[in-house]
Length: 184
Image (cartoon, rainbow, N blue to C red; front, side, top):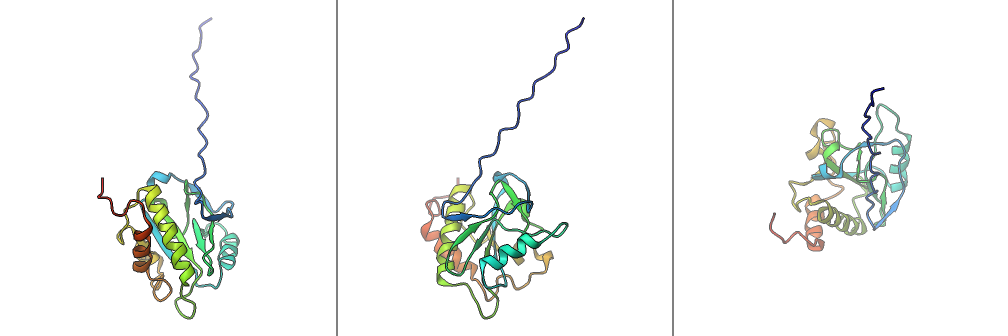
């Protein structure tokens, strides 16, 4: 009897979740796709057009296929950061950039409820951490608004009037461990 050699394929190595240490972990189930953290080359800033992180999270949870939406992070008005999607996974926040980006929502509106000082501080700290840990260069060409990253989505005012992305980047640059280093 001939010996049949069967190649043994080891099971896949489970990915260790990448969770921002300053966040409250509140995972969204079935609102992301497999991804690769090494593909994360840009950060996309959003405003929720709502008054709280809780309302944004509820909107994400209520969304259904094929129009499910999500974001990696939501920053509440008091600066509390919620992480909803592990950075190993792709969140659905900017259709043209999802697979290569990290999404950060801010509970703010274009009129009446702009981002708070606490949100700017929390956003800058998170952006600095993401750039340092994921190797994303600290610059506006890599830290974009929704409309800049995915113009076909039609979010022409995201973040106009609600969040100043230049201010977030400037504040993050001051906190970053690598922003002053030349690119490798």
